[in-house]
Length: 293
Image (cartoon, rainbow, N blue to C red; front, top):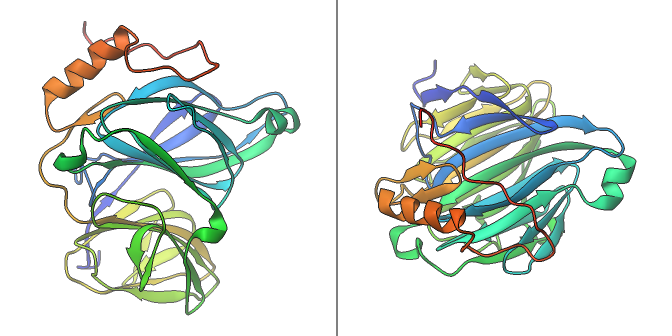
């Protein structure tokens, strides 16, 4: 393995309704990369007509959720009253802060016809000073995101800054989040402008300084090194990372916090349905029972 790779993270497979999800973060070798504390690769999965994604209302604290699709669509609804359909190339950024509730479902018009679902969902842990911020939601259409071309590679800056460009998505700490599309023979040098960096191979083939990365795996890059990413036949890649988070974070179910007390308070509030409701929805996901209880 190249000296520019600190670790390679392998996914855990999980079934989420009609989708198979590869969960890469958190991992033993890297609980976070920059502010990213959770990384799910969902699909690709073909949903037959009448079958859809139905993630019932559930809560979050202490983080921002980021949804980015390659194929398919999702209807986001939350306890602020937001209702937004996301399609490939767009960004849905939901800041939970002190607490928010949301649902994610296949839009009715797409459920009727069937569709392929494929995308990435991440959680970004908030810095201490923003951990209890008021919740908010923002949507950014694909055409508003900066795009950089580098030697056969198209790089879309989803959030944060990279390659001299800055995304319009508001972040809370130094952030690297980029979607890369490699044409056959595409290659570029990734400079160490961010403190922590990860490279995830969605599909295709990729070498990092000559070391191949398997589909569904994430390479954690060494600090302060410029690395070369190259693809022979073409690839889809996600770059993520940024400024190291300001201290330890606890994670339980859908909650991220700097203390266990905050998580316990959120669990109690959700149990008694005191965290808000998604307008028009009556279902909700109960707090999971503690294992061994």
